[in-house]
Amino acid sequence: MTSATPRPTAGPDRRTVIAAAGAAGLTVALAACGSGDGDSDAAGSGSAGDALAKTADIPEGGGKIFKDQGVVVTQPSAGTYKAFSAKCTHQGCAVGSVADGVIVCPCHNSHFSVADGSVKKGPATAPLPEQKISVSGDEIKLA
Ligand code: FES
Image (cartoon, rainbow, N blue to C red; front, side, top):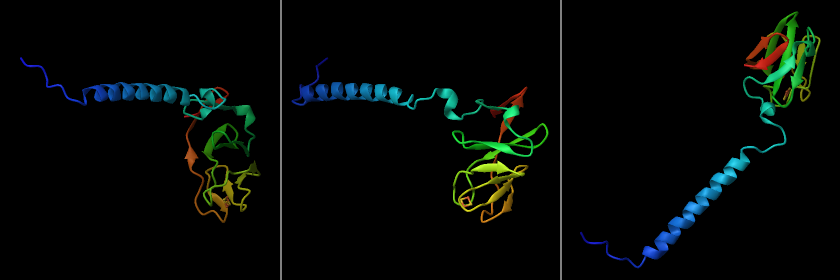
């Protein structure tokens, strides 16, 4: 059994490996820190299962916009709740208000139905995509 031929680069190689390991460890540590950025806790991230609203917060025939989650929740008829993307399908503005059965985009005044997100008035031509929600008791959650 012969030992490996010593190579002039053995030393630098070892140092390089150690330095690389250190850098990798630092990267992992930074990544771990970075995942918790923002000043809100995980509940504010708008992911599935988050409580969005109380049913009492959503007016019948109207709705409420949740900017942080990018969702508009409506109650087209008593006890029926729907949710749609709050991003206008025309040019991507956030919808600005809900009244009289329509969701209104302030940018170019497109109107969308609170019942199904369909276009009631252009310039938008595509409906607001529906978002899944679940209602349990008086709590509305993203599903
Ligand atoms: S971006 Fe909404 S109407 Fe133009």
